[in-house]
Image 1 (tube, rainbow, N blue to C red):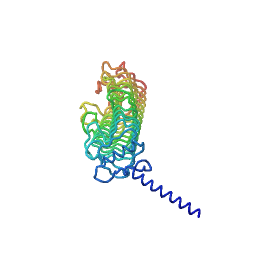
Image 2 (cartoon, rainbow, N blue to C red):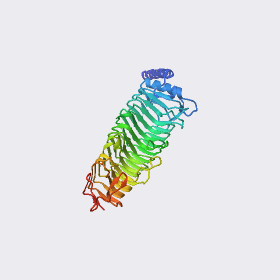
Image 3 (cartoon, helix red, strand yellow):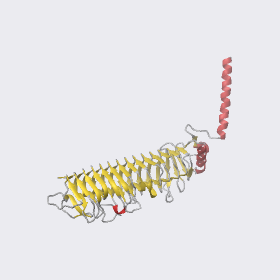
Image 4 (tube, helix red, strand yellow):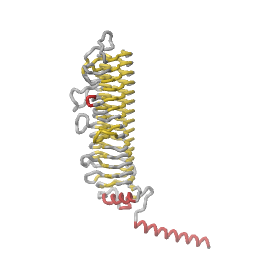
Length: 453
């Protein structure tokens, strides 16, 4: 009897608790396992109705409560949604889709520190975006996390950041009208393990409004099929473009099929371009140009490009580089349309000032394996311990009046039809092979220990 009474009391208590929970559910949405459930705010998927108002209410409420907002699988048609400090949006990767309704970006945040967007598909529906904008647009936001998202069919950029930092990691960004990821004036940004394809300006742009320290890391991404849609002579068609951004690290990326460069550092001091795998690019594969000081270009492979490596523009202050341990082969004899008609091609490595070129292997260069200097723009270059095979000219060195010192030592040069080491007037060979007996000598060129076959 006592047991039956206890059961009766327990059942009554459970019933009362159920009534209490039900009444609370009517008053406020229940949290899901991970956070707030968007459907509890009247948000509906797979309908043509505009979900902007209910989605914004759900985002604002979840952010206020410091809880994630969970969007179940489905397609949600929406206009621009505003994100703020601490917003966390969670979807099911490949199944939760936000589709642009009308024009404009999908997600916008200013001062959205500690923002997290995970597992969403952002579908731009090819709607045009304003200039300097992306489907995800953030300004003045630190410690952001954009993980495991898919961004497609953008009428502008995929992700556009200004004065922001954090991590963009593990996303798929495809079919983009301009550039997949754009960052201006970054503050501690990591771009890693993303898959980027089919963009019409660039793959990733790390930019600053004025020359200065940036420190963005672009690591272990897969980037391919990058077009120079707007044309130009190198502004577009690059997998990774660092402009005015100092101390950028570009490492471990797989890059394939670009109209221009795999990695282009323009006025980007102390850039590190290391351990990247590059194939089928149609201009300079790895570039350090204009007003930079310091570049390390090491341990990359390049298979198919007009130029393998170019470290240039000493006339603009470009100087100080290490080019080491790269494998560069199968150079092509022509640059893409839009570049100057007299620009050279078929060159493995080109340097001008205060540079060491060592331990590289260059094979199948229709013009030059390695070049040092352009007219009088040559200073303190050491070329040593390299292997050059099947180049028209193995190593070319400027012998023009005013050109500085070059050391060419302990290289192995095989199959150079025009000569192993040849003096140049800009890109024109003007001397016989300087390694041959009775060849002329030049005070500024130091030759020693080279093996010629």
